[in-house]
Image (cartoon, rainbow over all chains, first blue to last red; front, side, top):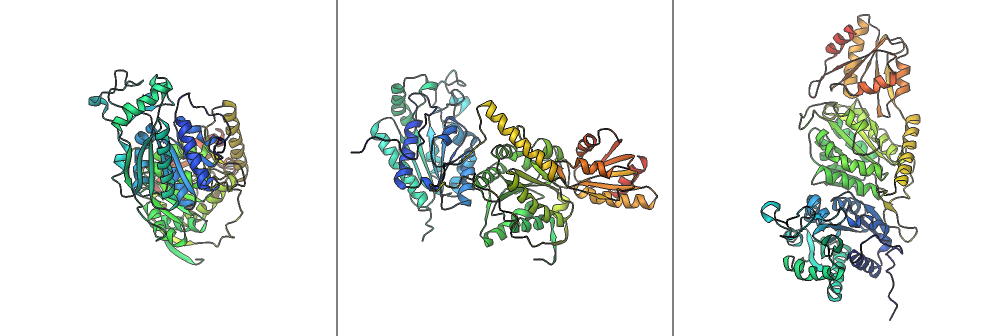
Length: 250
Length: 350
């Protein structure tokens, strides 16, 4: 059995992520898939504002930083110019489901051949833990100090279910990364997303329920438990839509 | 096409963009520039290009960011309120040093304003196109022919200096028809360095990063200083202006775009009345043709600035002349095109 190695498409530099944050795991999964598919040379990644804004330093493929929420539009620009390259975005919940909702919905409904890795950790991590569109009812954040009140702050957005209603979507799947089994499953889902893209079969989004121990005020272990017990209860894991929406080779 | 054809300004611009090598266009409908989108939606796919109607002005400018980041020639166009929405994206494009062309066919403002011609976005274009310390090159056509010629120039300047170039037209130029000749291009001019592009590294180089984030303040300052050095070079090499009957003029009308055409008529009428008038027309609004203006006003005792606004370019004229010559202003706002007679009356009073 080979030694446990850093994937080739992850740069050999330390990341700025907090201890216990699952960005490291998801970065690794994406990089492993890029390696397995042998596509690093032909891939452009897009990382907008959020904790993962500096992921351009971590992935070894060509990278673009995008403004807040605009990654699907930037990725569309890349993909339309270079339809044979692989294009992925890596976005958080504030980015994708609040300020960038329009770009997300329209890239999906156009069936853009891009793959979105969507990190749902129910908070704005980089700015210090404010309410996100995905913050759970009752959850205390910096801007919901008395807990999210659905009468005044509305309800959390279930992004994968919402996008699954759109005809341009080839894959909308929600996974989590709280234990080895769920991590292995998350990897399978991300791989499926890239496969759809490589076959030019439509838009793919993989929502990953993730931790933010720093802003949740939890230990890394307690944060993983919260993902398993609280997040997955509100955001059920599973496939919401799967199947080619077009076949360019047909 | 090297014969004269009768075309709308917006369509002439669109056709010229294609021959200038524009491969992708991303836009959102807004009057009075819609013919650009309509024309490109018909023509671009036929020549192997991409036309995409975006869900918003914001998405369109960010598609330009992504496309330009791959080293592909691309363009977006809009009109005043839409340009405001593109501000954030333009700031990121400038901060990431990406070449692209942005068209503003100006209409009245503020707010929804009106849909008729205006020149009220001069300040926005030359001073405040987005947050942060940056400029874009701003070119101002005044004929349908120039709508075509300057868009070609815009693509070359954008690639040479790795920055956005804006064509600041107005609804009058966009909508009116005039004969235009599409000059044969010398095979897209120069070739430009695109080694910075994020288009898949192919295993041949380290990964390229398109980015405007510099958390280290000294690094950010270095980037901005480097950019301003480029602006200085553009100021030295690329200002453009046209002087008409300025050699012996006592009074110079300074105007750009469609207003400059009315100023010419006013100056000719003034000459017939014995008033030695001339016209100075900046073609680059950023950088402003300071030396050209000083040269054109050598004999002038007064300058009258005319705009379809309450007076915006007049600031640049005053700065360029350093208060050595008195500068007056005459303007009408969005939709009210100044009449040559009105300009002449104002000129008599100067």
